Length: 567
Image (cartoon, rainbow, N blue to C red; front, side, top):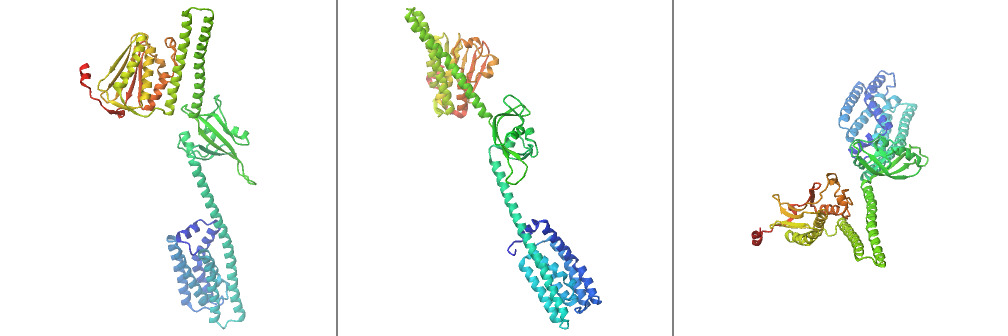
């Protein structure tokens, strides 16, 4: 106890149990009432109502009485404002001095009431200062009794024995109390340590739960929430307290068939852990969150009977479910898209064999060969589109390169001009002579422009396709592919960048297509940080624009003399 600091000492007092606090309260009241006990006892000795052999005069009684009153007043004033351990020690010493003088010069050691004040003093020093103070107090009492007997040798032998017995009785009584208090202190400290350890473990558990990325919820047997982590608040997009709310009211769960799902009712049917991945939470605004929910019952420990409950681990799997659905759709569409051209090509090749056996005309054989060839080309285009999509997903070919736009676009024009001519179309090029160099993926950019030009040629029966490139007043380089083709209906605008989507327009269905070209183009443009927009009206053609930000421009190329003359 002596090694404790004042702060630790006061903290230990504040954290004491009710018995300890009640004892301190009684001691303080007793110390305050001592003056009112001292004066009557002194008056009884003065007038001989009790043994007055030790009474040394009125001055002693008045002085000691006034001393007790003054100390009692200061005790409440000082200890109420500065409850330092040093102050407790000072007042304890003063009370001991006054009590010793009162016993020696007023009431004596023969009467038990005169020694009652020592019981209060002994209990006080034992609580505040520990075992050493208790034994010093007992030694002081013994010395006071022996000194009193030495000062009054005229006392009868039976009075001397009574005085000694009184001392033994007081020491024995306070010793028993001291031992009981020590046992209580050990129990109290053990409880405090256990409580502190429990709080520490609770804080660690909360820290662990709050550090988890998954939402964690514990409930009682009826589903009322008892504990939850911050991930749950994030999942449900709320910052209100959830303790006490029912988990069924918080999670508005439905099955894949849109039937209301009671998670607590389901948990009560299981005696062990179970999980569900087919549940959806519906927000008030109609937004749907697909969830993975793991539910485990909380069982009481051996011979313990706490309330049963459940622990829920909840994870948002909306993205995973969407990817899973996209994968299934992808496999379904690809298998369908592959099955048709393979079957057609196989059928035409079989027909060629049959036609040769029956000596068919060359025109019939050529027709079958051309049809088979077209289907092989379609398969080749599908495989190329899938390859481009795969490269985009994996980031292959994304490495930026410095591209001279004029040279780059001129090469593309030269590549597709003959193809347009075969279809009876004119491929125009309007490439500004002062185009800057840009820094981006050449592979991705070429794939996008090729897709746009081949689509324009495919869906334009007459007229022209224009490849335009210029830099606007804001420094943005715009690459534009414009056609005079069939155009895109307004109802199809929101779908054209979806994979495997093809318009229901019969003119679109006249040409083979995978429905991947524009999806791949948009995907590649997004990877490059380039904006891909379009404008289109049915029967008025389409215009697709690639906008390259000024941040991707590395230099501006001044026009040559030849370019100026040509212009």
